[in-house]
Amino acid sequence: MAPASKADKKATVDAAAWMFNVVTSVGIIIVNKALMATYGFTFATTLTGLHFVTTTLMTAVLRWLGYIQASHLPFPELLKFVIFANFSIVGMNVSLMWNSVGFYQIAKLSMIPVSCLLEVVLDKIRYSRDTKLSIAVVLVGVAVCTVTDVSVNTKGFIAAFIAVWSTAMQQYLNPKHLPLFKGSWPLTLSLYVQYVHYLQRKYSLSSFNLLGHTAPAQAATLLVVGPFLDYWLTNKRVDAFEFNLASLVFLILSCSIAVGTNLSQFICIGRFTAVSFQVLGHMKTILVLILGFIFFGKEGLNLHVVVGMVIAVVGMVWYGNASSKPGGKERRSHSMSSNRQQKHSSLSESSEVDDKV
Image (cartoon, rainbow, N blue to C red; front, side, top):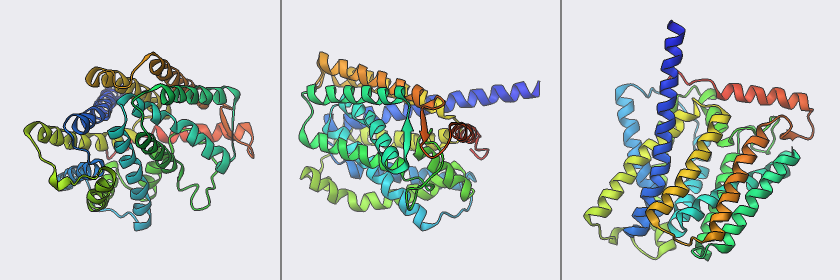
């Protein structure tokens, strides 16, 4: 009876964490787009800094309540994490500001072929035929959207390009590859997830502890750089922005949801397997596309763009299935049996629950 009760409790907590992640991750995109496009708060870097200020306040409360204990994260590790995370998040927010919600989300799918290119060139990964075909399908879908979406502009495309490459590099620069990009295991999971796992295990950090280290550093760096970078990008000063009640409400809502987004991401990383993360990602992609159309109309939308989106999403799902199968992704210097053993070990590690969370 006790084991069944424990399993039921875990299933309930997992479902709550799943829904929490979906609601906050999708909600932050919709709210940010409304704040920037509808109410004119076009200061993506400063907005990201404010997100981490509120997250830092949350970690202070958690520390006061005893959920965050004294811990240590070496400065080089913290610096590396902050640099790539800031580039990734700010790049995505600028892309969201200058692009339609649909193109913003579809452009993110191009991280699949970019990450695969990095794996082939730097990590000698070999893909199965199905995996290669799925990557080609994603590229076709993204290309169709890029060419036919009339809302796409030069600066929006450049922002999306920088966001995709910085995020892909953040995922690829795993401690097992640094500093010489070396490694010996299949990249089945998102390497960002693996990197967080690595930091948690090596330095005995719970999810809350790690967030307590990274959030203040990200808040400080983004608030210092943000106003200057935003002025360079938009030729507008954040201190000259005239708030009204609606824009202030959306700014507070954005910062509040950001706390949940950061928290839920760290919680889910310690709780779900690679397959669960794939399904979670697919669900969020589809929801963002649907809600983007509902709340922001047919910005840049036509039949060709819809077809491109469908093609890209199909390629995304196909890639997730193909790359997770035995032989879908392997190193040229290792045997198939070794690859399967390493893959099984990687999946087993990711399914362990962080007891402190």
